Image 1 (tube, rainbow, N blue to C red):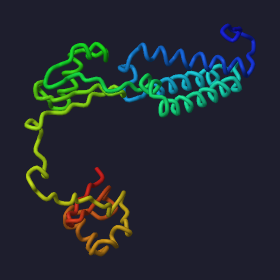
Image 2 (cartoon, rainbow, N blue to C red):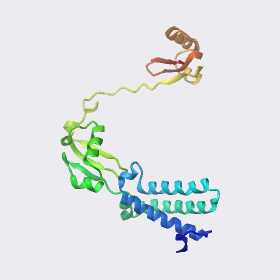
Image 3 (tube, rainbow, N blue to C red):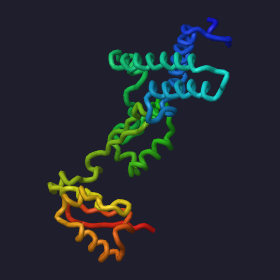
Image 4 (cartoon, rainbow, N blue to C red):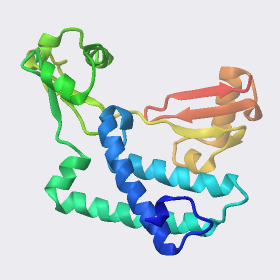
Length: 234
């Protein structure tokens, strides 16, 4: 257990033992902290990011430390991370420890108070997340789930959902994506050649519509409907 204490030097095995102990201790500590601490990151990803960031910071900021120990430790952590990902795919129990199943926060328009405590979030936080989704009434929510990445997925009852074009049998039009004709005062001839217009047309368009020449145009675009738009240098 000498690797637990400060040493003048550590062997490669001792560096690896420190990495193993730190890795599993950090997993345990992060799990105790709860999902709120790793929003948008999986438990394994968060532990890995913190570990590597901390390990690489010390030898880069302390001239008395060499890179050998840190690289050995980081290599061991990368191997552990790879094994952890593989285990999460093959071992259900470990996968549920790393990424817990979604926790129902609202069922049939009613808040599940016990699951709020389980997810370690407050009622105010839940209502705030619902407001971000433009949901002002909990009773309109058929189901809301606390996801493993720390986000909330909410599903309204069908009668409260916004009708779509498909619901109204309306055939949607194609989105007119603009193409760049001029960028920073230079003509994009690859795009211009794909249109039915010439260089002279483009120059006349800019001069007649904006009373400037091409060099004063920061950005100019044209879409499939032949709609031309330009933005000038200020």
